[in-house]
Image (cartoon, rainbow, N blue to C red):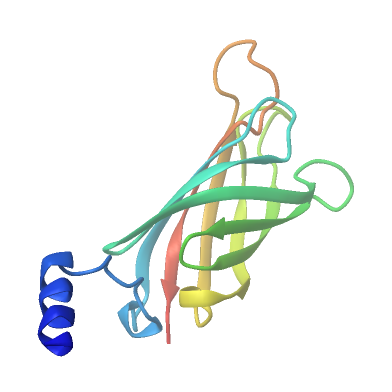
Length: 148
């Protein structure tokens, strides 16, 4: 009787939430990756969305370093529901110092479901509109990554 009641309760409860993708769900070949990042003016913490093949994620982006200055290098940590990605961004200025700013990025660390990711690509950084503030408010990172 107790077993019957327990089974009935489980059936009424229905399926639980879908588990997050495992490393097996990550691409084995270079998969197109797009990361859109938005920062408030002159801030180093913002938000991002990630599209990695069929996977989608979003979270908090935190930058350490500067796209301008002597090093022109940023370590960007993307904290997501599925894991954490650490990227290195290197600036290649073209033309004027202010928008747009171009460069390259690569994965230098990862945890969780993304622990095996490797790869990189290019990025563009611009302001959010005329007179809005810094040239780093909107960034698009495009590239290819592999999960194994």
